[in-house]
Image (cartoon, rainbow, N blue to C red; front, side, top):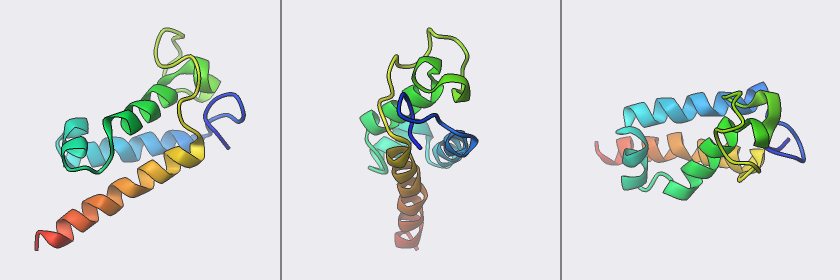
Length: 99
């Protein structure tokens, strides 16, 4: 499965966004994730722009407007899964190292 033209984002893919939001909330939003080197700004933007874009992922997009997001997928679903998987892993490592 992939964001964009090759395969559509599924409910499983849209659930990744929820994980991102939870990790952001616990770490000072997007800027906190970047400052702590959990992910790069480009990785997060590619993920969010793709997930939000009706033009990139069709009806599975978080927004229906064709004015929001990127016109083409910037990240595959496999890349999105890897990105979202690394966030809680990085957070857990941070928590363990602080104790």
